[in-house]
Image 1 (spheres, rainbow, N blue to C red):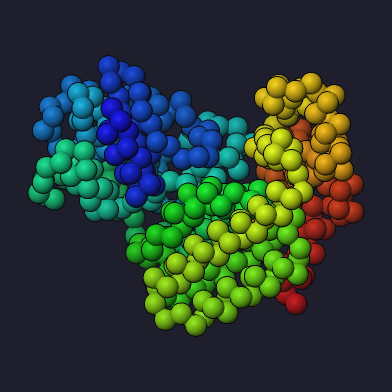
Image 2 (tube, rainbow, N blue to C red):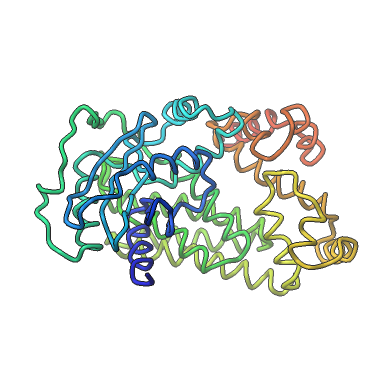
Length: 395
């Protein structure tokens, strides 16, 4: 079982495809995206619908759903491996909204679904069949002709055209903000390494059809450096040090002449920022309060209570409240609001996110309450803040 589990983890890391092992109609092993899956029950039904009486030597079975998803299955270890969901098309805003509607999810789940979709692999027909071929070789340890992995179902597989693949800059930026930047803000270099793994894979699917790969990677590094500097400042690093570090890495990247050199520098950059924040925070907060702030960050999208936090840390709420106030200068409620507003500021920088979506994502009952809290925190309404950002960018 340990071998199968390690192979599943390897395949997931290499491809970004969720993997599930089913035995006697139960999912016993799973490697899935870190983001919450708002369609979990739908996906579970699809995964368990694959025939589980396949022969050990059957070729992969491919399926698609009406929700812009694809799956394939492969017998293994007396059970069945199901790979997916994968997306048939890149997660544009239109595609995500169609998936939300098709799955009958409430509108407030749109930001959650958007984050989840950005974590999934996007595959065309041939790439998906290649993954089937790769899975066979990893899990069956036998060579299988590439052609024999293809179970032709042309009516199920509409072939996406290149025009349906928009530039992925906003997708990468959103994912980096939600995943990498959270880890940098908390000074977690090990988490950064895991999060950055997928973004360091070169994309050959036409996301940058007019750019050379080297230039594209340099542009990605510049974007990451900018985001990392902002998150490091939020994590406690001085503005002067964060901006200097950003400039050093950007200047160094322009001197590099190979893709591999820039990619290595890219990885070094984010780990360096996380380490700098870690050193700063270690000298500021106790390990207990660091744990408390991380838990608050993880639960910022719901009505998180001091009593829940105290229970997770095995402390009395009053005692925890006093410690939090002493070390951060803020009460629990004030700190939670601060974390939410910092997230709101980041989300407002992406025009895809409406103010209503942001308010629902952060656990506020409606746009009016969110606007009131945001104005109290920043002195501006969310709309004024967004307009100010646009004016600043134009300058």
